[in-house]
Length: 321
Ligand code: SF4
Image 1: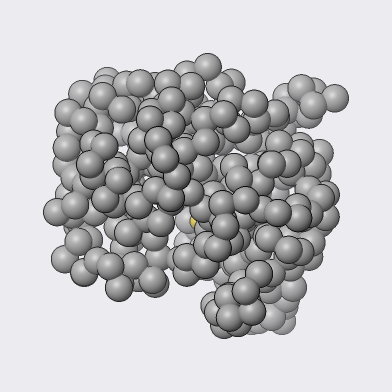
Image 2: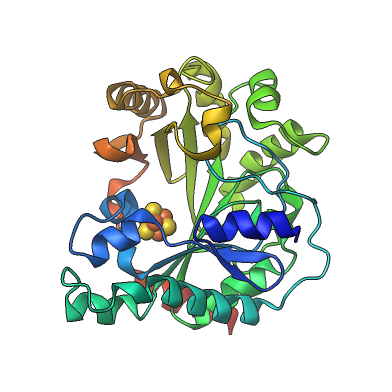
């Protein structure tokens, strides 16, 4: 990794892991730990934010350079040359996460129960930055987490369908970001760094119905840029036939402030209007929304939204062994 990048990541409180992975403690992990609110994935699916590790195995590698991305885009290659072992990445990610939250021990707002819980992570969001499907041993990383009783939420931009097709085991929940309603907007807003990105992305959507796991389409909505385009998004969502659809408004923070303006943030009402219209068109049910995160979720079957993690992980374990 380029040394300058290392300095930036350290300054931004990333915990660097091995040669190409990293963790970063998210706002909601700290919030729940101190007895305050949990993230919207707690509201939608039952994630315990204080037990969640946010990580990436592809810190410096992505197939896109999205305009709305708030992370530092230190992408210097599309291949992870010298790959670390998945068990090493998992163990060191847990250690780095626990080290990053160690400062909360003794904080008067952190109860001993909350601290004890946080010492035993149960969820891993493989989503921090970069495109995780570029790590060729991603399936083994998911398997290692499953064996430790850690659920996995994987977020992909969908440009590598050939990886998803063979991914074994699949994560507990698979997210595909759908933020380009047409080829022109896709290429302009997501800035793919590989050829045929739109075609590959569409192949991923076509593949989704055949993947035996919980699937979520994530619409990242940027006002005056990629919304509403109802007809176009409807076509893409029908192809993917996901279990859940999250619509999330762009937030004007981090690195994205160089590329977009505060006016590009849709209000929560605009996000809700979009989400409800998609629900109406697709026959989904509006499930919940969180105003402070400008996010709304609609479900094909709302009774399946909350995850029974113990039984889902038990099933996943049986498939592995
Ligand atoms: S699921 Fe995402 S937002 Fe929620 S606690 Fe984990 S990393 Fe944070």
